[in-house]
Image (cartoon, rainbow, N blue to C red):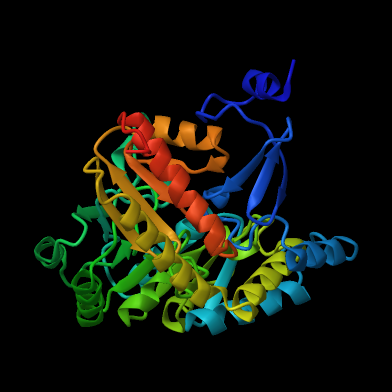
Length: 397
């Protein structure tokens, strides 16, 4: 029995996996058990922004694992203190809570918002955006796409959904009892739809007017992915709460909720917690990853490389009407097709490039920020070849 069969025998049947077993990663590439090499344009779903096994993160983990891995939050640790200071510095916010994943970060955001609502006599009513994805917990599936909450009734109440970029619907839903708004500036699993400037500015304005909370899910857009440290920075706004994870650990599992002092002051001892959250090992990895993102100027590079990739894709797809849109920011791009995209992903994999299809027909490209232009050109070429193959267009024509 091989490892794939072993996994299928003992794991819950919740993942529709591709039939390769990855055994090694280095930089922008991974290798399978047969020695086949792949350019990784998925990066663990926007997790490995520094590539695989970046030496700074590896060194930090190696050093920390020899000293102290876990102690619980009954005590203080140097790596956690350093990470909290760094999160405040890069976010413009004041207080943080460190956890283990994006779903946990969003749960912490919702709990903090509800405590804020109790303190300021507001109903526990958050406005969410259609086609959103905020995690797999009971709370987060209650505020996201319906397909992820199917079969899990009764769901958590207190969420009112409006269409993405529909300012009129937003204004009609908002009132003095609105607790806040939750949004991704680019919908990762929702098809890479980008929030408009007007929509984000109106959210900020309404939240300011009604003393409501502006909550941004930066789990996928954060840590340099879009050409800014956080996606909200493109709009010249300042949220009250953000959720972070994915690239935050450079490949090591970690997440965080960061908020203003005004929100933090409504939380007390015992209001929230995590056994593993903020452990020294994860925090050491995160400090190394965040400093590397800053020190190696990867945020600016993400912007420049994203423009390069988008231009390549537009140039190469100009005669392919089956490509209906190319959208996103930085190195977070979606290529929308007018047909199902899973076979495109499979054909790309056969040509040595890993990618992903979301919403059935949007190829999601979130490669490591350390990718170079030669690799981006290969990515674009392989994607276009796979698309042409699936619509019967000979590349030579």
